[in-house]
Length: 511
Image 1 (cartoon, rainbow, N blue to C red):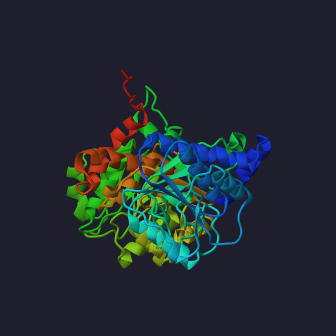
Image 2 (image 1 turned 135 degrees about the horizontal axis):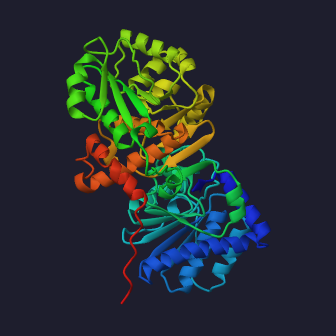
Image 3 (image 1 turned 135 degrees about the vertical axis):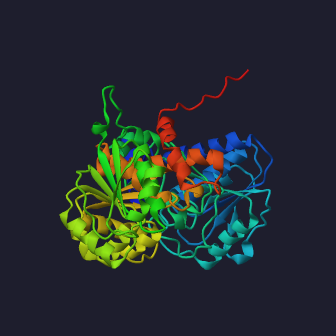
């Protein structure tokens, strides 16, 4: 599913109005009616006091339409106009007059801290103060209003986005944003729902179809792509009846040091579980018995050094190499890594200490092959690209880094991002239980194993991140969040494939 920027969403509105020969007022009525339908279906006429807070633009206009529809259906509604400016959109004014014409209680005007209404925890708030077009800091009393709503701890539904969020940067005041129980957003998801700094403001998000031009949406490249089961199904490469292990490549995992052999075990087993035909681990001598006894399916090559890797030499021709897990950063290891990069012509996946070495020795980046996949956690990423102001600045810096070095970067997190030059893919699988030691090593093995089978590196990164998260989602059904181990993710990789083709269960017919 595509993710559009604020400018693209505005353009979609304009094209829809023109192509469908409707007015902006009619489009507002359509969109707000869809939100009312969602509310009405859930509330079923429940006698809950509903407070609707409306800004002065089109988001506020949506709120006024919803207020009118709620009143028409017998709900107990109080409507408030948040007067932070002298300007009002034309469609807001029309719907304001329509609501007043109903002859019910007129909307309450809010102009300062003294006007804050009483809101009880058992009430409901509909937040229609600001939409995706917010582009300036909030006035202090409006921030206090938002804090007042949040302090009520009542169920809060935000329209399109929680008020106080910008579309392209972190909020000026982290406390000046609505904490929405749920956000009903129009037509397409927004990037802010999936980033750590902004995603925290909405516990749940629902996308509703308001009939924007399908032709425009299909023909316009998205600002980013949201990756779920439907998107990765098209990437899946089925096996044929007469396949043999040689058809699915030979991956080499280079890593490990004394006390960190487990990382190589996890990556190697994950590469095999994801479907690599053959897998070899290149490790220091101290890990030989561990690898051979833990993963009998894998082959092992050892460095002459006992405790760490000091000379990367091998006599095989792998399809892809995953390097860095548990590698360490000893001086001899750094020299060996440089010599390896200079001579290597094979596709690469680089993680952990491989990334740390690149951050310490950025001149090594000129040796990495085109479309090398880097999988840093936040600390490694910061060492690689430097600090950032907010999540949006981080994405811009990663895009610049990707373009400069022609590489794919996986920004690991709650919704991992896969970035290749200007393209951004937002993953939807995974859970907090995966914030555990070794989870990243498993991802390295998964992506390496997919490339081994012939997947394009970008497709392998997108598909691999999704399968990794899906395996974690399946695993927590037995372990819970706290009990999840990285090895549980590995053991559920096969089931993550099966889940791709599992049809959703249909509800039983009503009696």
